[in-house]
Length: 389
Image (tube, rainbow, N blue to C red; front, side, top):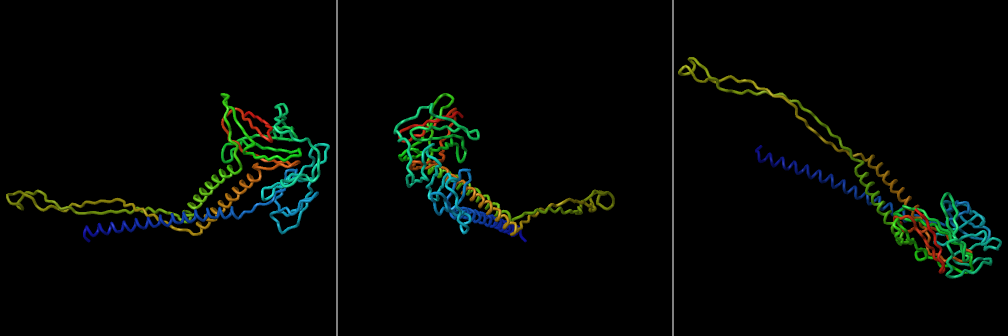
């Protein structure tokens, strides 16, 4: 074979080998993309296929996921959400604190509105108390003095509250790091007046902080809608990263690579002919050179050859796919639980009817400082709370 033909053949083999490597990489990337898409799609399917339910909150702290069928004067009839084909249960209203319905409305049940006075059987967002009871009318624009603010403790957490203008307004403040840095203000408002209250946390609550240099900074109070957009962005990013990681794991799990190294020993010899000077009758003029002998030269060593082999195990790839799907399902379930807990607990705009209570929390932007002050504005009255941190 000519040198040119040999070089062309060598280049052709190298081109074929390079194309094989490119093809392998292309196939692997296609599998990664397909796996990532399928996992990400399964995440959204699992989220959108999940349904909400009514939640009965008992006074002992227990919560019952249910489908409420009837709210009577003495009992609430319901079926358990996870056993809707099962029996109908009855729970006494005296044992129930609140019912949160799937549409976002609530029923709050009060044992007594004021000590020594008759109480309504129950109230909700669509009606006044069924039984009339006497309370003082609320005075619009009356801000209670600071010395009327009381403090009580539960599990070491201070609760500050006012009882004024026919209202009981309680608030506690803790730090929270869920999807950001926040002050979490838990609020309970009891309306013991004969008037209704339109309470919108986004416009009714203000806050500011004081730093070590006594500089005041206003803090943003986040509405439920705004915070849920923030949560959704975080959760989508987490799902994308989990899907990508799972896709990479699935694509590479079925492949295994082994390397074999071979050492080949060689031992060779060759003869070298040379002319040697001689004297005598052999050469003219008694001198010259004669053909020499053939000295024997030898050489030996090792030639090392490395071979890499890639194999595919469909069983390992299938197991990796199951693990990735389980991880995505666990993430989906966890994120749904978080979103549902936020939906249930985050305080939204409510009309508070006579005898009704609302309870929930709002998140407030947190900045560095030494103290924070939160003001709840209700019908022109301002209820101020403060904490050092």
